Length: 174
Picture 1 (cartoon, rainbow, N blue to C red):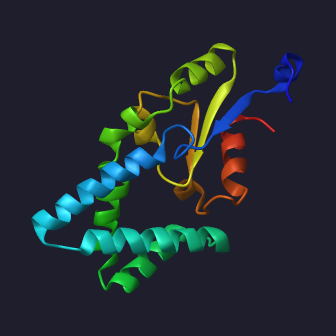
Picture 2 (cartoon, rainbow, N blue to C red):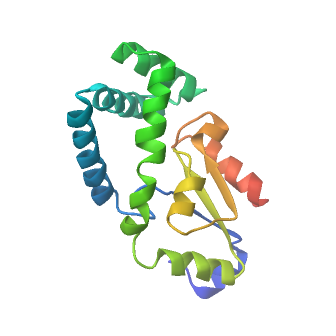
Picture 3 (cartoon, helix red, strand yellow):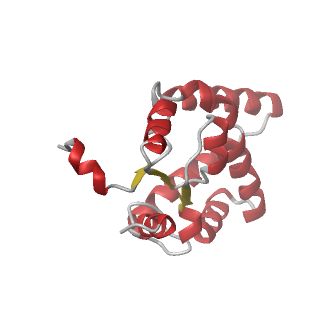
């Protein structure tokens, strides 16, 4: 348990994004609805297949601490879904990176903006460490951080320590 005196040495407070700053369940429900409607309208199951395979493979690669995971992830997802890596990348960009942005603010946990503002006001650096690109997500939620590191920046997924080490180096803290 921290006492107020303990905070004197803390210069960086790090957060994950997905499931930490916003509620994932309502976001996933909205994205699931959008994907079903898209699939029906286009009569095309490829987005569902790609996103399902991508998530499963990504989890495995994180557990295995695969270096340069993005290249491997795209290649394995493409092979699993019989699609080109370029097609997989387009679907992932649309459904994992772009489309969810419109829903993030409404899924934000209450008090998060005030927490981050309070930390900054108290002279603490706010850091973000995420397995996914986070800058656009933060902007969509109306948030900002001093330092943002995504797994793609370091080539390894969490829980590998490289991401946290990179965030700490960026902030100039030990």
